Image (cartoon, rainbow, N blue to C red; front, side, top):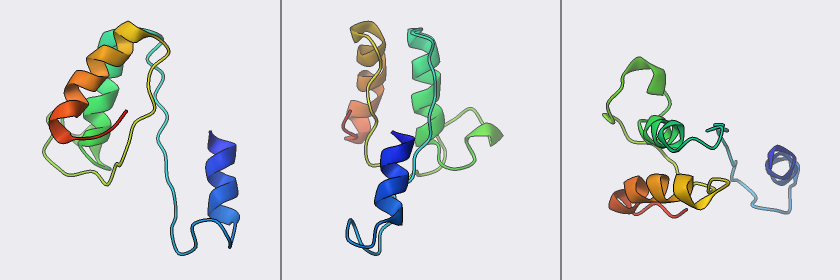
Length: 85
């Protein structure tokens, strides 16, 4: 995924005047770790400063987990904010 994002950002023909970003979190296939990562990303760029979702993030989507149990936990959080997964 990192390579694809870098290729898109370095191309003058693909998505001109736009820059994609990403954050990678590894849940180790544990649903609560995935939940914590989803909340951290939604809290904005300074997610380490506080445990609550107090800010806005420019996030447009989240790429799902490796299994159904983990994905269900994260999708239930995201659905309230209308963020696709």
